[in-house]
Image (cartoon, rainbow, N blue to C red; front, side, top):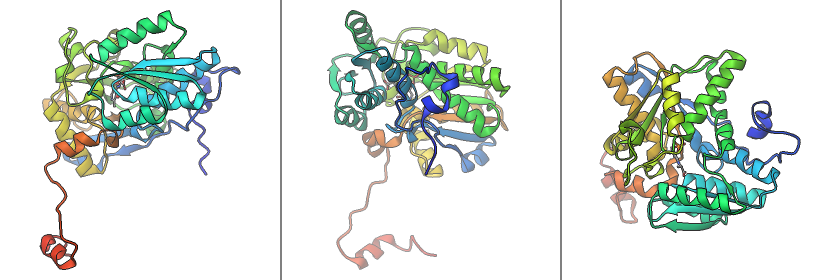
Amino acid sequence: MSSWKGLLHTYKDYLPVNEKTPRLTLNEGNTPLIPLERLSEEWGVEVYVKTEGANPTGSFKDRGMVMAVAKAKEEGSKAIICASTGNTSAAAAAYGARAGLRCIVVIPEGKIALGKLAQAVMYGAEVFEIQGNFDHALEIVRSVSEKENITLVNSVNPYRIEGQKTSAFEICDALGKAPDVLSIPVGNAGNITAYWKGFKEYHDKKGTGLPQMHGFEAEGAAAIVQDKVIESPETIATAIRIGNPASWKQAVNAKDESNGQINMVTDNEIVEAYQLLAQKEGVFAEPASCASIAGLKKQLESGEIRKGSKVVCVLTGNGLKDPSTAIDTVTVKPTVIPNNEEAFLEKLKGGVAG
Ligand code: F0G
């Protein structure tokens, strides 16, 4: 049996955990760092993926949520609230349920992946669909949390960033030091902020070195890249359909301090990476996650990431979160056959020879 006891236990010396902090856990963290053997060879780099979809609710949000919800509980809060493109709401609902707190989530109507909505309702959250986008939802919940006695658990809550930084520790431990480049999708920009904090703290304690941070927004929601708020963000990667990132300044800071970049990828590039990753490497990550792979591919072609580099791409969420996008973007559909072996063999047409 695994002896892994989750993040608050494992990283208590690096986190705001004291004797009064509840040891909340769903055994989050300790996610696999998987080498991409075929793509590495094809592209002439050493690529690994940090598969955050292996967390208990299927995304990296569990790392931040366990910390934020534990602190809310420690502080005597009875309820948590968040705006979400889906994954934050799933994690808040799960950890809220586990901690016995009321959980209220506000999501953009019609723009969240099916699996994420299923999670929020299944874990018993009170779900509100706003007739607006994520940025509008965040504005409302920020204001409500100030007026009511409800803890805000979006990544503007500093405990979220604390929890999420632990992934950088795990990467350094797995590789023996930081990679040359960390490639990461950017939406509300909390995660790039958290990773950079984590790499710096681990380097200060253990001399693990620092990566260049390469963040990727979706082209239709590229506020930081274009240096302007996007009023109506649009992308197939609904998780990062965000036009006014809350941690904008911190993301720019991570880029500047690490001598990195914040760039953008198109929906077509995201979908291409999404399929490549699944079909060449057997790794199924949700579309937003694949912005990290699409960005790497693009910057290898442009020379902005050098061949031979050691690169970790963060795969933020599990592909199963968003079955509709998977079905809608692949051209190959199941072949319908009669209930008959000969007909089946006829359809295979020697495709299984050898
Ligand atoms: N990837 C996935 C799968 C996400 O769900 C998110 C954010 C990001 C990347 C971007 O991370 O916001 O820290 O820059 N999802 C949030 C949510 C906004 O509500 O679930 P970020």
